[in-house]
Length: 429
Image (cartoon, rainbow, N blue to C red; front, side, top):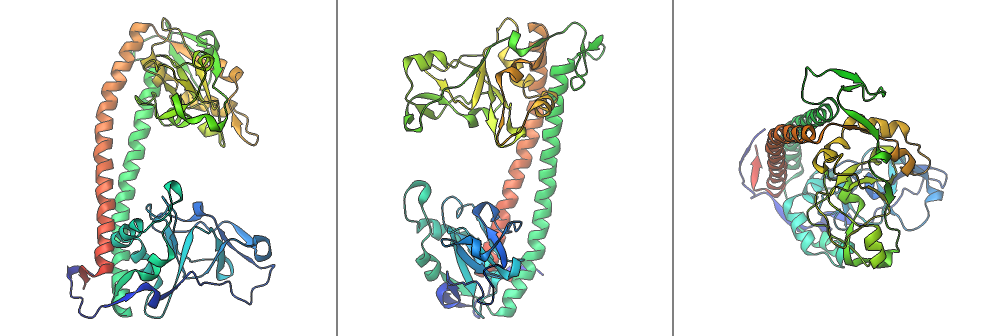
């Protein structure tokens, strides 16, 4: 199938309320209170399609306040940012062909003139999302698309046979685009692994392939250059947990280093957006100076513990979160630029994951962190290693950026194909 210039003479324009029932779906009466149905919280709703169907509940255990829907209903997220992000799906594969889900869903039950998959593509098309965003009511993170927008949305709709041809075209075309995106995402994954391996080898083995090596004493670290020292972190700097303060103090005051500032970065962002009303004593005790190393202290999973970021500058009057641990090493031992790579190397991540205990929440204690082995090249060699990493990483990052840009263009093209096909701007032949 192919696309050509559109001829919409056979398309009819109607409001969606005349093509489907909006938020009128009901669980089938023949189901009993003990019957299992699918249960769909918002995280189980995919972006631009798909439902996670692993959770089920007996109907009698669900109670009031959830959204009912059945097989082939079309789901549209109503709350920001889920609506803008394209969360929605055709309900398929439901246990007993029925489900209850989050109240933040609109449910479109298609009539005989509208195929569910065509309605779904309409719901993720640019016009629908654009006008829907403009109709939102409420404030901040509680803005929602009103039911009236869904009902009154004007739909130009072809015959059922034409809808089927469009859906067949989209299945083929989007499959091709998705395959390209998947291949490029795999390339990004390989580049990230290459970058990670480059950093790990440089900070644990050095740059001289002919250097005499010695055992580090740790299986996960292996041999290190014979002239390097190895020390536990507690002999380089003292761990310090962050500030513990009530939620009412946040949002104004002095700079505040958050969990995400550390988790998402090798070095702290140049502009810290968080604010907290801290005391003079707080700002002295929990200060943020150049060279400070911050580690994530607690999370739901082991893999997110011990992620580090280094402060490359002193942040006046700043404090840091209680979910973080700060270590302030001597600059005569460890350069900040070397530390930001060393404490993100994959061998060290292996050590932390292996040693961590998981109860209900994973938590990194000061004792475990203090026992962390740290290799110590000379300051001059640390500078050489950092220069090598940054030169090589610049090349990898440029390739990564090019691929990310290509993926973005493919995603935009995918969206354009959907929008033009279901609105009749392009005719499927």
